[in-house]
Image (cartoon, helix red, strand yellow):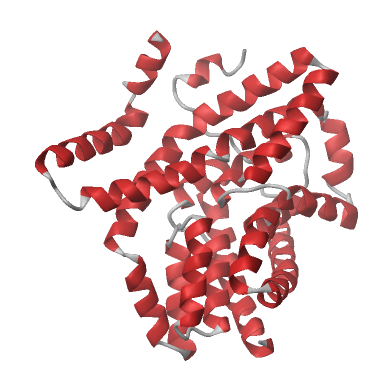
Length: 188
Length: 156
C-alpha cells in the first residue's frame, strides 16, 4: 500500500493527477468541455485496459518460456522467409493500438530477433491484426479489406528492408522505458 | 478484445499446468513491464482525449468529405498521421465517411496512416527505438500509406 502511494506521488503521474483534479473541479463548477473530454478519456481507457494487461501477461509468458537461442534460430539474422512468416503470424494474433506492440518488439529484440523482422512485426501488428480485420470487414466490406491487406503486406516488408539496410552497422538497440521507482527493483 | 482475453486465458492455463513457478514469474515480469509503461500511456490518453475534443468527428467528416483529388489525399494522410482513434471508433467513422462520398482512395490513405503512423505516440516510440529511428519508421510508413492509397484507388 505504501508503495502504491509512493508511486502516485511520483512526478510521472503528475499529469494524471492534474487531469483528475480538472475533471473533479469541472464537475463542481459545471464546466461543460470537461464532459466530452472525460468521455473520450473513458473510451480510450477502456480500450487500453481491456488489452494492455493481457498483452503484458503474454509478453511475460513468452519471456519465461522461449529461450533466446530458440527465438533467434526462428526469427533471428538469416532466418529468411520463414522467420518473416513467423513474425507476421505472431503479430496477427494480437490486438490493440500500435503502442502495445513496442514492448513486444523490445522483447523480441532482446531474444535475438533480426532488425528486419522487428519492423515486419510492427508493420503486421499495425495493419493485419485479426481482431481488427474482422472489424474492418464488417464495416468496409471484404473486398476493401482484402485489397488493403494485399497491398499493405509488401509495403511494410519493403519498409522493413529499408530500415534493416539503414540500421546495419549502426549499433541499433531497442530500450525498455522504466519508471524511476521501478528501476531499482528491475534487476531482481 | 475478447479474442485476446481468451487467448491469454488459454495460454495461462496451459502454462500453469506445465510449470506453476515459471508461470508466476512470467506474470510478474509482464506486470512489471506494464507498470513501467502505464504512466506514459495514461499521459498519452489524456492528451489525445483533449485533442479529440478540440477536433471532433464532425470536423474530420467535413475535412475529408469535401475535398477530393490530391488535396483530399494530403488532408487524409495528415489527419490519419496525427490522430489516435480507438478501433471501435475508426471503422464506424470510416463507414460514415464512405457513405458521405469519400473515395476508397482517400479512405485507404486515412486508415493506413492512422494504423501505421503515430505522431502522437512518437515520444513513446522514441523511448524504445530512439528518436531518429522512430521518425524514420513513421516517415517511411507515411510514404507507404500514400502508395497503398493510390494503388487501392486505381483498383477499386
